[in-house]
Image 1 (cartoon, rainbow, N blue to C red):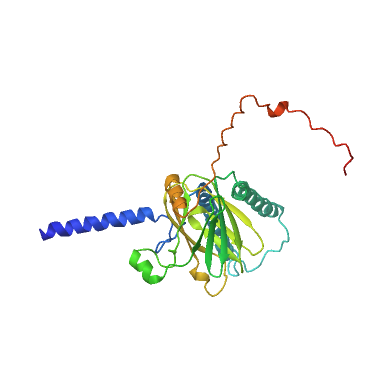
Image 2 (spheres, helix red, strand yellow):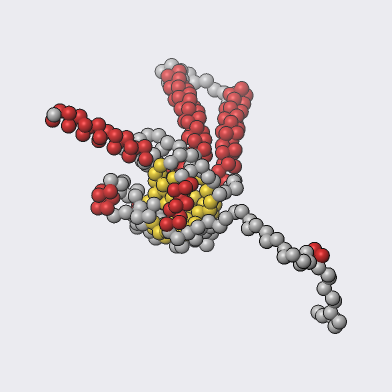
Length: 293
């Protein structure tokens, strides 16, 4: 009986751990060496581009190392007591000029479209305004009339709720899954930076200036970010917690905070009363008898 209870307890713990890991998909992990799993198309392309550059840099570094070793061994003083004297080699100079140019052209061919996609704000279903403060975030949904202030969740509350300290906030931000979210980023004081690694988003928040970015979350989950600009003594205590949920759950959350979105459907036209003159058939107004300025 005890053995069965122990097995059941282990199974429950394993299921709870798996559920928590599934829910918290956008968070740093101990000993992690790669990017967080991409939650947007932009971040997926950033990850692919990073892998291409990593391979390219590895090949170049290995080639340069091999070349240095060959030069050290082949052209040292013992192997060449009488050094050769020459000043130019046309073939070598052409190669070391053309090959780096081709490498840079290849990098530009992959990076420029990605930069364009990041900077070009598509038509958005939702607008989010982010304001950095010393040291917390204000999030506003201008179309719904909802504003929240997100502070760092105290350590004792985070431990009690099983949420990550220094990442969890007092007011998590909700966004709908599968919709373009346009983000307006600004600051009330010093320079901050709104950054969510799993979204591929990092935008400076500058006082007196509004920067723009966007994201479209592909799956539900909890994603974390932080201020990525050295903004002051409490820079390390400005986390960002975003919950990606279904549209129905998002609308319910907005309604629970007293907000609502205006209906995009025009109101039905009221038919004119019987016998009334249509607006297009009304007689022209009589010009005034005295001139006006």
